[in-house]
Image (cartoon, rainbow, N blue to C red; front, side, top):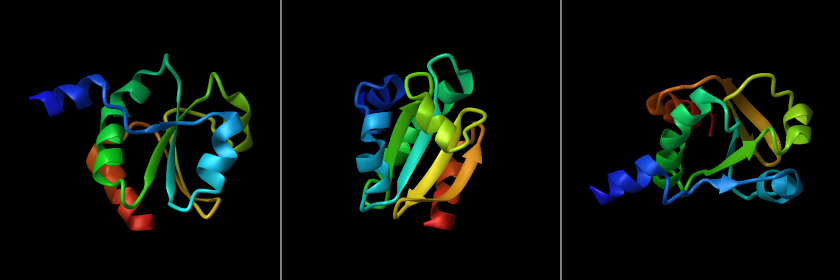
Length: 118
């Protein structure tokens, strides 16, 4: 019950919040693959996939880092990487984009996508 409560309400957030100033270090120079979730506070579909991304971050922590970048607070990064709609999920490995998905996907599809490209 407590674990469900923590995940559902986000009190034990395991995703990493990234910013324009931390993007280089946290994503480009990361030794692990990084999933970047481009999102905004006002975006309903972004909030919808948030709990799934938290679960994925916990369950796949040995394989991948899950990060969140608020596009309203960090518009230059979103623009640099061509983010046109949100939520946008980008997988980076060795500093390069290896795959991108746009839109709210169920957890199973996100995991399937990650497993297929990493």
